Image 1 (cartoon, rainbow, N blue to C red):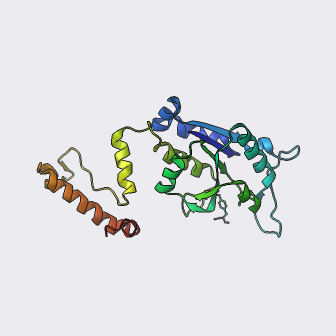
Image 2: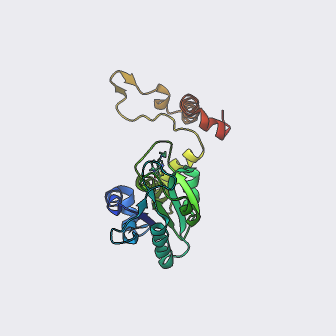
Image 3: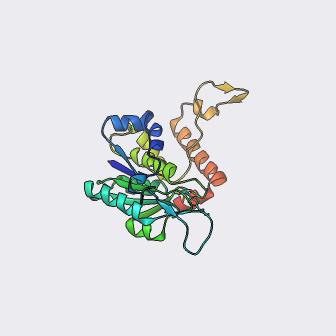
Amino acid sequence: MQFHIVTLFPEMFDSPFAAGIMARAIRGELVKIQTHNLREHGLGNYRQIDDEPYGGGSGMVMRPEPIAAAVDQVLSAHPGLWRILLTPQGELFNQSIAAELARREHGLLLIAGRYEGVDERVRQLVDQELSIGDYVLSGGELPAMVIIEAVTRLLPGVLGNQASLEEESFRGGILEYPQYTRPEVFRGSAVPSVLLSGDHEKIRRWRQEQAIKRTRERRPDLLAKSSRG
Ligand code: 9D3
């Protein structure tokens, strides 16, 4: 899958993809990440990409023409990319959106904004608007990386079987059961005896109870959705 990013800070995308699963996926040509510097489409001698808001107010707004020029250039070389604008006003990104995006075979074009926002007319250039959560970041770059990693993990061949089962279990909608490994006693707290019992049916039931209890305590919103309450 191809990921294209339109950004003022292409260098931000180097190190997060230089290690671990992402690096392996890139080396194996399962994914390709290409940044496109928005500054190259800036207006005038100063390569301007932002301006003051009509109607007044603080902060600067990104002009639509540089973004449109960058999008047109990328799409002319890579037709069919699914265009996503990262914005605090977007739909909240989650695992089911990640799964949908992983099925977009032409790949994704992610547009990362900066400043106080983008001109409203940029919205007509995209297919979807996404936010990664209700907290304020300085731009869409980190959200773009989050989405790229979450989508890459779902592509065939990127993870082994073990890990993809884990993924399923989160889609199942509740939190993980508590996990233990050696030592049997750590700072006075022992591994629950059921896990040492060798009774696999009993272990399975205990884990399921624990997962539901933990979800009820920490994420009741997930239980409501999964109807296991
Ligand atoms: C003054 C109102 N702010 C909106 C809450 C303006 C504003 C703040 C930060 C506009 C843009 C930004 C930069 N953030 C993003 O572009 C962004 C973002 C985020 O801040 N949080 C979670 N997801 C995303 S996706 C893009």
